[in-house]
Length: 393
Ligand code: OVV
Image 1 (cartoon, rainbow, N blue to C red):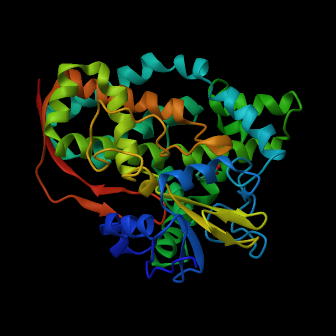
Image 2: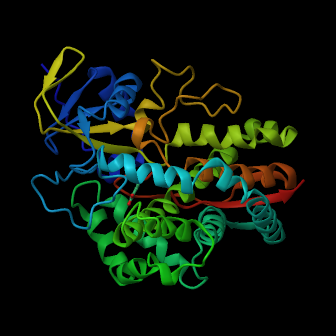
């Protein structure tokens, strides 16, 4: 018998404190059933990882949200990366791996570090500020659209768009409905930004469109792939950076450790991604009858993978709930893993390293000086507001 749990993983009460419910799901068994949405869910590290790696049994092509594309028409043109399976996925992923390769990203390092230092210098002059809009949003909204080759105007429009798409992986609840209303005015703008004419001749956007010249993909496919960058590239790093600042402000010893050795910046960002897991969940759909532990699940079932619960599973992690920037956190699933593992992780880690490195070198203290406010999203975990004060080191 698969244990049935009375948990709704897409409601505000859950998001306010998901950890007791995460533990209940992990402890109930390797797979649980959630009648609230008629879905199965895996919360243990081992099962989440196994599922991410078994793309043959657990498909993405029927959508990685609650909606099953075999039963419901997708609300937007499906992503050619996220919402596909091999063999189509192999073709698009190979291209994006090349566009976002370590060597391509290496060329951005100096500019990313300089932008982080300028921003931290500005914030030090202000002293007190809101770490979400003024740092966690401001930084990616500059460096990432620059790297894509976008014009300077209206870049903030990327936030409501990303917020809507990440809400769309959950049920059509009030959060999703509100996000749809917020994003409606920017939909046409986002679509227009993915066109070749809108993008500079250097940058990731142009690199994707160049593949259409070679015939590797069509022009229409190139536009949908640029859309993936516009959708998944900002909100994720905003919440990753927000998580890192939130961790460093709460775990003062860790921040002092980082100051003493700024080369820990990369490790600190990675640990924040493990602990806070900015992307909390994704679904798969079973392509056949599958076994999880001793249990059997039928073909065509939606299974929720709780990445954030796996990243705090005490079966896998010692002192799982502690932010420890010297722990060996390799293998966390905050970026996923397997064929759909985050294609932008190299870039995200560079952003994290640049910002946390600048904080380590320039800042002596980070204190929370106002009430932090949570941001509610069906997929993303993060803050809407985090008032802080920093002092110069
Ligand atoms: C990982 C992710 C999230 C949202 C959208 C996409 C990818 C996309 O490929 O469009």
